[in-house]
Image (tube, rainbow, N blue to C red; front, side):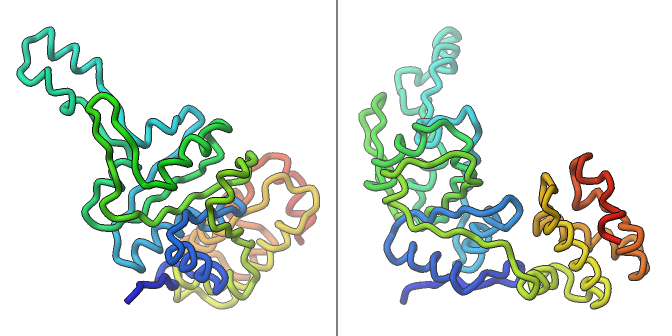
Length: 270
């Protein structure tokens, strides 16, 4: 019987998101997730792993990351060093091959969740360089003349902050889902998964201010879901009276992070 993803105790997913995850699993295609920063893209992979009872492997992408990094690395420096000091087994090149995150996922005896996080941070060629490996679920190690083929096809989740356009050839191979920013009803449910005992009036006032800030036309950085969760926690820990949330905006630096946005904010919200 095929396992299906559903919301967990710590992660609330919309019906559309759950459907996208399950379609990607059924079709054995990578799931490409886009959305505003802080909407839970990375946490989705953690939730899928928890829901399905599978191990999560995370490949964090940086501006300097190359596709090869995810496959394997050949440590020529260590081999040269060992050779100079007469270490045994220097002729065995396989000792100096270290699998990357993609290689680790392929070699796993059990199916894993592979998160390729923030793929758009890398250069434009990065996604295209992974097309063969993600299609065929295998790659070739030239130094040892060995093909690493996935023992169990991993469930691949890819996140993007839409900082760069991804190649069409790459997009064609993915199931795509955009995580819309939560409406107030869903947001309340999300916050309550973290703080089920939060006072109703505190949460309502915090959310009213939060959505007002997000609605300001000239705000440079809109506060995210994760920042609201942190703010609610700060308000609880600080024991802030409900009536002061709007009038004094306590701990506002938890949700507003730019000087320009802080200037004049109190006058506009009150």
